[in-house]
Structures are given as structure tokens and as C-alpha cells.
Image (tube, rainbow, N blue to C red):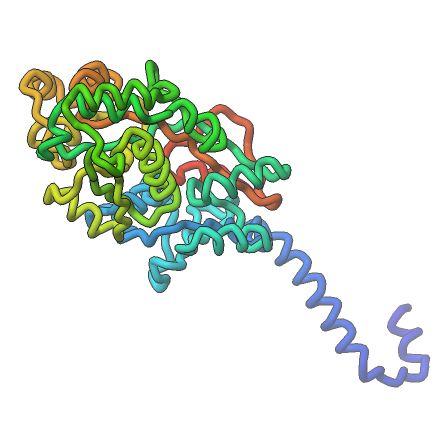
Length: 378
């Protein structure tokens, strides 16, 4: 029947575009089903730009077996614990970490050494994360202007270190007078924008009059210019280190101690410390938690005992328990005063509006970039 009808009709003229139209429809249908299958694999979250992180120093490696430096140790947990993979062709100044699954965005690290440049890049929308890498004043400015700034308790200890081989500084009464001259509580309140915290039984507001009396009782009498003695103070070019040096210089000038501040490139700074070629210096004891051991700073033969500090009683304690923490040795340090403990540093994390910050308890920040593994983009 159907065949008869067709055979009785005049053959239709073929449309030259009919096949092309069918081919296009077939391609569209195939593409629709292919994309429905492939999209979750190929494009889930990867259409977004990476999370862009600015850091101020070049890591020496992204291989945990190659003696990583401090910057590398902060980044390596993303690789060793969370399975991120660095692009092999990237340089260590600008590198991207690819997540183990495509539900997370990539993380791009870029080294920008200048503090002002980091701030401008963030302001212009070309950076998403600055973690402990922007000056306190700029971080406070962004916090006060409504940007997302997360402050978490940290444990790095800032301290003023003495060279105990110095003929004047080797005298405990002189070190105590210097401590009394420093208005540490005032610095914490007014100079550090809420990003540092006082230690238990920390320094007071300073008492320059009493400190001057103690120096005079120690036989250190001012000359005709009001100077009792002179000291060199080593620091690095890092802004907070320089600012601390200037605060110390101003405080000690009030009691007749003249300070010459000498900023040095970090490798030269630590070389001088190791050789004992300094009088005073400011630095930090890096700690990721309050129970971290400090034996390398305060044992007689500790690798970072720059002070030439030796206490047989404390050495015996460390030999019995090498994991003694700062809190456990702090009473001895306050008595001997090889260093003046100043304050601990909080972590300051600045995020762009592109980044979602989870509120789960597991998002607590330590000293590493582990938290980046849990961030998502809007």
C-alpha cells in the first residue's frame, strides 16, 4: 500500500541541504549526550581560574626529600598530605599545584618580594590569598575597610637576643635594666594593630627612670653627651623587623644606650649571628604549636643558640626531655634572660571576594598552607 502510493507519485526533487541539516542535527544530539557524559569529568570546577596566592619568598624546592627551607615547608603539606601535583615545567617563582581531583580549583603561587606590590595586586583583583605576607598596617587597613581578614592565634615568638659574650651585656643586671626600659605592653597595644599577643607575665609598660637608676648602680654612668655605652643591633630588611629595631633604639636612647641599627640580607644576618658578630638582634622563634620543642635555641650546643647561652641545669632537663616547650623553659629564661621574650604573632589571612571561607572547625589555621586545600571559589 505504502509502496504503491509512492510508486504512483512523481519523484520528489532532492533538497541539497537536507543531508547537511540531518548531519547537523545528528552532531548536535551526539554533542549533547557527549557533553552530558563528559562535563563532570572534564569541566567540573575547572572552568574557574585558580586560587591565586602571593608569597614573599621563593621556596627552595617542592620535593620533600631535598631539605626544604621554611617557605617550602609551609607549602609541602599540600603535596605530601593532600596529593597536589606541581607542574614540572614551572619555575619556583610562579608555579601551579593541581589538585588530586577536579572538585577543587588549582592553586597558583606567585612570588612578589615587595610588600607594596603585593598590596596593589590584591587591590586590583589579581590575587586571592595573602597569608602572613602583607605588612600589619596594610592588613589592618583591609580589615577596617571591610575586606575578609581572618585572624587566628599563632605561636611564633618575637624576642630580643643578647650576645652574652659582650663585656657589658654578659652582666645580668644590665640585661634586666634593658628589659625594664622597653615599653612592651604599649607596643602590643599601639604598634601592632592587634596582630600580636602578650606572653603570660609579659613585659610591662617600661620604666625608663628605674632602668636608668639600675644602669647607674651597675657603674654605667652617662658621658657628657648622655651616652652610657653603644651597641649594634642587627636586623633584616623585613618591615616588622626594622620597625622593632627602631622601637628598641628609641626606648634605649631614653636611658643613655645608643643603638646603631644594621639591616642585613637574611643569609648575611644569620651568618653574623652564627659567628657571634653582633651585640643585639631581633628575631622570632618559629613554632607551629605551643608544645613545639625549643632545645635548638637554648641548649648550650643548640644549632640556633646564637646567644652563647649556657645553663647546665637546663641542659640536663633537655637531655632528659628534648621536647621541652617554650612554656616549660620560660621561667628559667626569665631568670637568666639570654633573650627578652616580647610577644607571639597571630596569623593574618586576607581573602578576595572570589574565595569562600568554610566555617567548619577543621579550618583552623596553622603555620602552613594546608587551609588552601579546603578553599573553594564562588
